[in-house]
Length: 245
Image 1 (cartoon, rainbow, N blue to C red):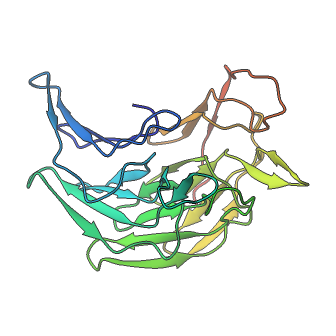
Image 2 (image 1 turned 135 degrees about the vertical axis):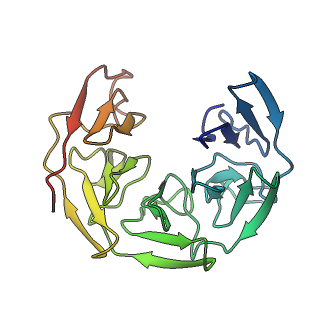
């Protein structure tokens, strides 16, 4: 399902939330390749939404996202700050401490110790984007703020190298218009600092795919960030190999 959180546990594919357009699912399922079977997840404590999340090695953590606003908001949508975790071994959910502020369109990545939630945006109808992030530690059930990466963006991709978080693509708002930066950033949790990646040979974009291979980040596909651009899909890609620091 589009806009759902989908993760691989080592044994199962877990998926939760998502939907198209004004459809916001609050359901999930688990697929087991060994038996070629699906199983419904139990009801979540979260409202239906276009969701973001990550697998920690033990739990699926769902945090933030965007859903339908039934409280009379003029734009009809709301951005969430709440979070929950699903444990496949116990076949159950638990509520987590909420983020300090609502975020949608952020990247959510597990670094082995914390869930890194970077960028995104708050309330819809505002061009204000987050340039910072927050990190959740499951062992303490607490959040901490991350430093700014310099440019607010949402709808970007992120990958964990084993040492650093790599962020690329997405939308940002400059000069009164949406645009997509061709430069990304890298975050070091140990030093708690960001630095810029070299400019990519690719045109900036959204809706692209990115994966960490163990030695480099591969980026492929996507579409333009500006709504004024002709509707098209990119068919090119590039690889980024980090320099050891």
